[in-house]
Image 1 (cartoon, one colour):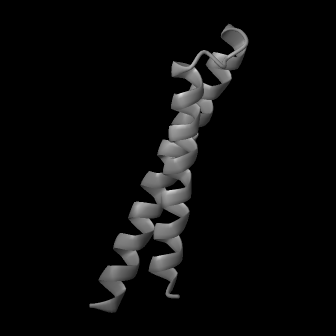
Image 2: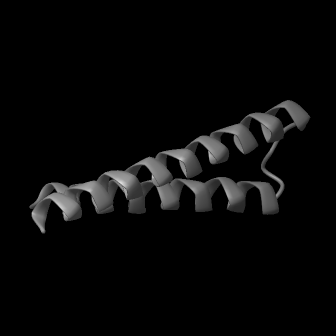
Length: 65
């Protein structure tokens, strides 16, 4: 497995975690506003992590050219 493939798999797992958070929100599994607020922050962090991974994959691809 190449580094790019590993990064893509990590990105997929981050996306799955975001979907789990969204599902919990939609299905009313947030116990209170603080839980909701915390999970919004976690989802934002997951988005930022995915952006960083995309940038790393782009750099790896540029180096391979």
